[in-house]
Length: 131
Image (cartoon, rainbow, N blue to C red; front, side, top):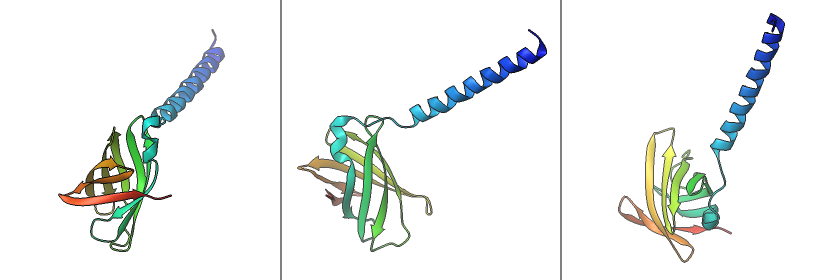
């Protein structure tokens, strides 16, 4: 194999490796959620930390992992946390993270007749799904 052929072969191998890496990253990034938890996908509202109403858009991915976004209506302005968590049967754990303050707020919830009920720092909270 001469120098030119080696360079062409190296370029082809590099392109194949790069293509494989990109495809692997996309596939590994996010898989569909478990169909048993599809009921959790959508908009939910409930009391916000610090007052007002917390509006969350939730989606179950990678089997039982929750991802989403939130916003506060009323109460604290400029607070748009990201949402993460997990679901296991009727138990839902959510964590809101506000990058501007670095604060985390955790919720331990259970699904009871289509409503998420539970606690945040020992305080009772209820979230209802919006249609």
